[in-house]
Image (cartoon, rainbow, N blue to C red; front, side, top):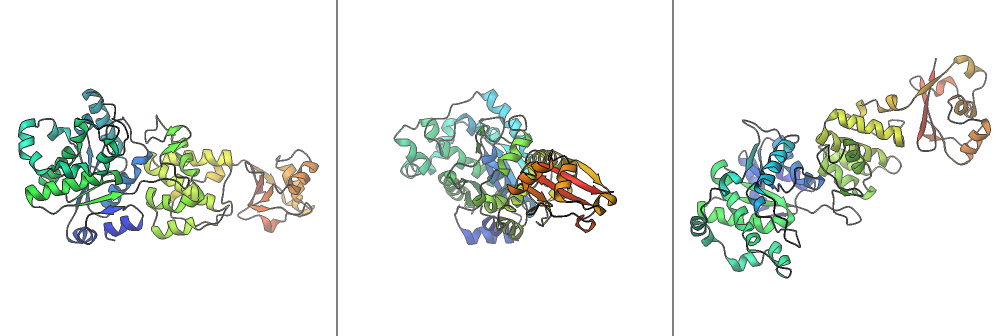
Length: 423
């Protein structure tokens, strides 16, 4: 599939400079595309996942991503999307953060010879001669046009420092350098980067006469309008020391119903048709789609083992959402055997069944209820389940034919589980 169409189908594209030309470019050649990452902290957060996943998709389709760490522009501070001046970090702090981000991005993108590139714009920005730079590149920028950029306009009332005003020029220079040195054809970024991206395109065309293109991603919010990547505990970090894999899993597991389909497309590699099918599940099975979303997102960021551990821990605490295995998925979540590891079991003999084994007997025998009266109250309240099916009659009997693959799953309420295994 053409990567442009793939990104559009999955909801990544908000603005583009020339849709037909960009699509055609991917058909003609191996495209090099870049995204810049701000080293203002030693970890990226979940809000950075959209550009990261876009680069990963491009690589999976056979093209070359460049992840640019802004070791140079980070010393200036990007005013885009900010109402106040960023706190400027020291050179040492910026370099330390840039090194940490390089390592972190390697989880999502394969770097190395013949693969993706990881560059730091400090390599070409720090050696610049100010007067020479102004003479050679400053003449290509119109102050009047720069003032129309959204990132500048929104700051003029509260004040925009001269150093921040220069940020657009430096990012534009980044695109020019990457096109000149790495044949980079496409810059991508958040929707607040539109003015910076267009300036880079214009500068590259003016100096080298090369045609380059730009794409911005939409600002991701949940159905309540809250910015994606925030939780009750604050930012959701990609660093396991800042946000544990379990908490990361729970962030995605708690996705609102209306956002499941969109998040499956953006934050997993599941096929688009599968994401669409999962998003159409009705509660309570929609919770299985949320489990798959959380598992896949955690697997991509923290690896298979941590994803399995987080899934099992969640199942042990909150129970499973698809006891019957009704939801088909290509996700490796089906291979975690979470139900086996999470739920203890007790054995039932053929002799016990032959004597007339009722659901009341089953719940008492399994230890989920202390007395027959407690089971009756549980059934009356609608809290007793056999293999995910709510028990309606206390006189219901359990026979050998009820044991699928030699076991029956009992559940009392939402969280207490026990498996009956036939001897």
